[in-house]
Length: 279
Image (cartoon, rainbow, N blue to C red):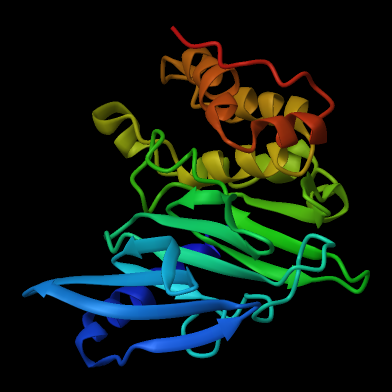
């Protein structure tokens, strides 16, 4: 459930090669676009992406790595064609992906529209995992990314599952793609079949929970089975380990509801998108 972290090594490697990269330039809809790799001081690499009109910069992105969905600048294959309008309008659009260069963080996505003015709209999935685009047979673009809110929650980063979230770009609206998200829930007995093999050794010392417990709980939530997730967590909890009720409250009442995707996930599960219930 964590394909997006595979982007990190490639991006880190790309950052180390910035000094050898030449500046790149494009012209689209009367807008000059320049991507410049800079080395302000030794070992501190930085990209600058500038959108200019009439010789004046009107929009800039600066980060350790800046990717544009143009040839040879986007590190992930999942990007729409350069200039294609994704939201149903006529103005050309480009997608910008920034990456801070940290070992685990952080990505951000923006959709830039080159209309009468140059405007940028932040897209979801700012955090550890990034996102990709896919165009369906229906001609609608989809944005597919990993849920960021569970990174380090009762787990190391490597042990933090990242359930997949899928949106449809319906005009200017991002709508959860329920058809892509919703799946049948496995029987509880199947989910519990290997429970005796789970490693609970880090639970007492560090509060880290077994990966299968977290992964299957999240999977149920993000395929539309919130009640089944509650039941699974309760049934799978180690009987002689205290704190199961507190973990459930923290997960379902607090952490899940902190997600930027919570309104969509609540809709998927047919529950109100109530705010977090945290102490």
